[in-house]
Length: 158
Image 1 (cartoon, rainbow, N blue to C red):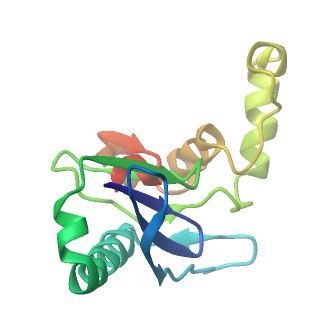
Image 2: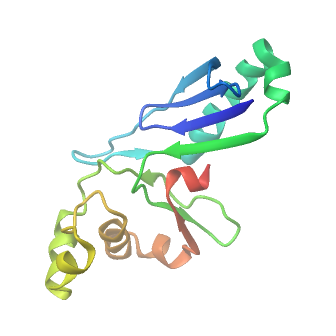
């Protein structure tokens, strides 16, 4: 038996799969996305944990034996979310998601400072990427940036 956990942008989904790759059961719980300003997209990392445990509790209620037989866990999830943690591994602020556009000016700054960025990485700087978001936080929320000890993508935090 295997357990899959997907931290999507709109929900956490879990699935139990047997050795023959048949889906035995699945559960999903929604996640709220906040948009405190136009172009902003954020989630509370605590919601990810709560939603994940809710799906696991639901699977346990209906498929306890299968869940107890899990011998491997696969994790997938949304990318490029900036989850900033303090020295105690607690989130310092809501996660800025991949579809957040606030860091457009920071993209221009990064490309001006590192003209070879696109050639080196194969990508132009995009507001949804983590580096521009970190530059935005350093500029607009310096106290948060200073307290940051670790930055994780959403699924790594989960």
